[in-house]
Image 1 (cartoon, helix red, strand yellow):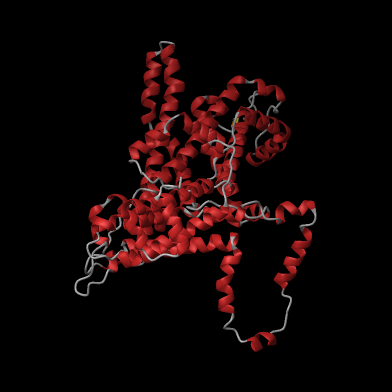
Image 2 (cartoon, rainbow, N blue to C red):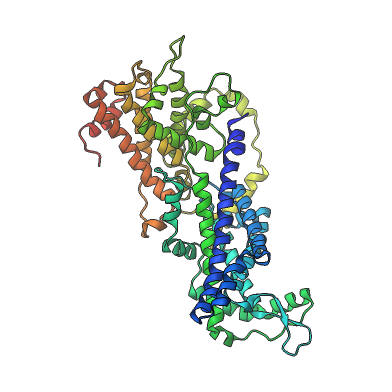
Length: 547
């Protein structure tokens, strides 16, 4: 069994099922509390004890419990949607047309229909708990002849549809499904407590762009297009349209308060849903350093296999575990520094250091290729010298369809209308590269801590043969990162893009790792075989000149 298959079937599936059960329980408890708050409390204030007692026990009736079925089904769909569309690396478009390309995917268009419809029902569901005026779309007509359309319920569902549309937009275009890992992972209870505060409501309203002004704009939009919606719904349900919607209904304060409260609850639930999924999916995993003899499944579920996994979230788990191993787990570090018997080979160390150095070098080369092409072109020039010049001369120059398309697009860039969609966005390529810097960051921290710990714990000297390679890789990455420059963001820290936060954290991780090595090895670090430039840079760390 491959490590990716083992993780998806044995670990990730269980995490999502646990998170789903937690979410269903929380939304059911929230429904009960809202019902009690808007029914039992007013009865107690009017000293109607018997009515209050009826409202207290009605939540156990099958008719009330049946209300939780459809919201639970909706959150089951949301869980499946999140499991298939989450990302661990932020999406950074390099050109404006990529926004349109992402929106025109069939799966995205499907989500833009289903998610707003689900949110529309959820908003109307919570509105029915607040007031009886939203119980159904069809109500008896004032003249008693047949049924008419309930404009209040339709307006609530329309606002919920807008909320769902904004949520889908934030999820697909605003990295709403980004799963971020905490370096210090608190327990689930502490994580829940940290999220249950007013910041959750503010974050929910901000991410979905919902406010009082937005609610009023939606009401005005409904005033303009509501007639078409009402006629379509009424003809579908085969009922009369009833009284029309007028701008004076914007002064209906109970209606606006009920709609605002329902929007607030659903937006907070959606934001809480994202947080709960992240809390369970990013739960720490401790990989064994070595496999158990005779255990076929255990042979794949080891740390070195996770470091080279094709599944990004599994690779992140592995690199975070490697970082914890190197920083605060002496028992597992001792396993890394062991040698095989018989033979005396440092297999555990080599299995960990090779993929760790590879990911650092690949990231460095990717940055160098974009920002320092003159340095990365050396390798390309050397590889091209092996080509037979006579064979190259025989190849005719053919203008392919792809090249013609490029020429047409290059010509369209001269027009202002197409310039935004076809021109590269500023710093887009670098931002896309740094968006994938999280495993590199943990790899650098792990390498620095392992080298520093080897000074006293490595009895067999298994790290010594790779110390120069590790320091060289970290210094080369620092050299390229410094050439990229810094990004100035004039916003609060909570609104700084994730890739910018990773860029800052990567700079600090590089310096922290090099200081960890130099503080332990001190002047003996000069004996390591390094280039003159790298020795000079390392001397600045010995002299504490790097801030």
